[in-house]
Length: 180
Image (cartoon, rainbow, N blue to C red):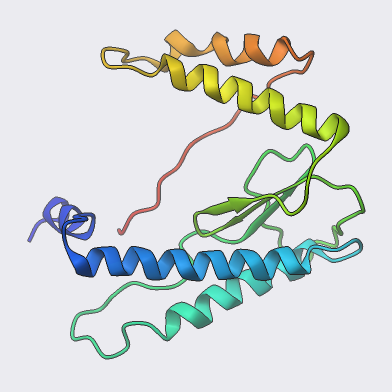
């Protein structure tokens, strides 16, 4: 079986086995997210919180599919990340990092493929989220058949953000996780 055929089979949602794997992964990711959220308190070291999330995922996935004949990849697909305030994404600190959370920090938490915010956001932070949501909505409305280049949409989210008197963060990239 070629790599393309194997990947297509792994992504075939008509298979109950595949759907069960996705549901199990989602349950683990959601529980890991809840654990990480419960640890997000002022003065908590980000590296310690991220390690707890990763350890939980390793432990839970390690208990799955032990008695199957074929090898099934399991574990952390993407490390737990806690991006604080102006850090846009993917902050998974080194073990030596001493960064701690402060009261009032705005967090973006990623566990495997789950993202969430821990508490209601108000004031300036709420405005930032509303501006980002406006830009995302504008970009989404521009996606349609026949549009082949992202460059055609490049300035539209930026203009939407400027209407809120904010500046768009550049240098973002998008990734996908798949079996090697």
